[in-house]
Image (cartoon, rainbow, N blue to C red; front, side, top):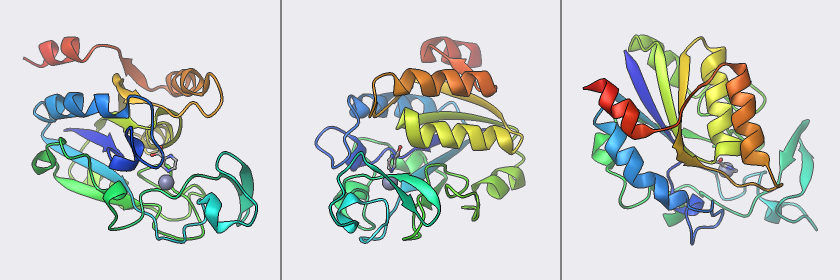
Length: 209
Ligand code: VGL
Ligand code: ZN
């Protein structure tokens, strides 16, 4: 069984949002197209309390982009984004959410961030996604979404770590590039660790016929 994992296709990560990823909105039609090719579709949802420790505004004199120590882990500070129940945390309107089988929220604990859809950044708590996929006898996962250099990367690496064969729809990912080259570096790291890169969605869909 194979599953598609949509990473953080939320308003705040699209142009106009609080943590806008350049061209983030362009992946939505690709996600809609791909969902039909999978028996199981999972979505992760960045879902922070209003006082989340990753928000620069929670730390005196700190600005987005700076790195602090947050309870023993290095933490990049972000603008306030994806606050639970806010518009920014909602899935993008054009995403066909009726095709999603299950949603896994993450980043819900105030004191620790969670880039991966599987575990928090300290690998202390699981979201339940790994067990869920194993229960459904999934052996292969396909990932797309936002942002390539953060949540997509850590979701893919954790999927590998849990023993899933892992592929990435590169065309359907966009990144932050806080530093020049971050996206390319993230893609190289994923590939080196064993993530299979799917360059063209059209070719993948043709092979499925
Ligand atoms: C993300 C930064 C902060 C992401 C989430 O979805 O990649 N990045 N929270
Ligand atoms: Zn976040």
